Length: 334
Picture 1 (cartoon, rainbow, N blue to C red):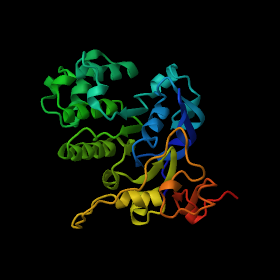
Picture 2 (picture 1 turned 180 degrees about the vertical axis):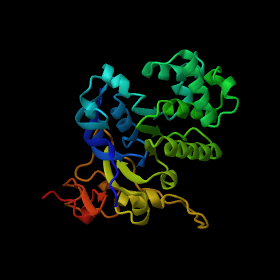
Picture 3 (picture 1 turned 45 degrees about the vertical axis):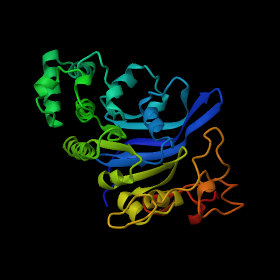
């Protein structure tokens, strides 16, 4: 089996937020890699740290957030760059944002400025990174709008965000993100604000563009159905850590971590009638005060007293490329 080239590596990333109530460890030791031309699904409940991981990669955290430790390694023509060590507003970091790593945000209506046309905002990204004329930038914007199946692209380029529907705005967001052919595209729940029919169209569009441009995608979502349809590999997050990761077929066929199993059980199955949907018991713990030991143990059906509530499990490789952080499969430090 040929091993694909890595384009992005996250190693033991820790991102904390300082608030009046205390410190929130939003990302607490996350590690994964993104390979060339693949789609990595980052999945988990709301509040598990998926979006903060994405913001850490692009260094666009809120003022009270900081990367405490870890590496964010971008592989490009110049070698390997650790983004965690770059200054937030350095020229090098600004050149990487948009050109080498782009992001599709969760809510397109809030991502575009309402006082500039869609075309002007898309042109700005091209003009910032490439030495082209405004006429050429406009031509490329119209071409990208056509690629994302926007009708009357020549007219839409001069329209304001409030004149477009949510689905059309999300297409414009994808067009802007892909306009510079980035190595890595981070899609932060790109279909959450859209209805089901438009969701399917957007996901199909992203997959088509990914094949055409050979970009790698980090797809952030809480929807395991979207992961099954889109991803090549999956990383399951819970309370700031990666609980399980592996090939998408392996994870769906043989989920090992109790949390992964619970997520999959909560999906309604076609043709199976139930009076009550499965739900993960308990609630997400207080972010200011994580439980001791394994973070999932207060909600786990396989809780082992004296072990799960005392020690924190480490990653165990149960099969090539399939790792799980659980005492059921070892998980104790040597």
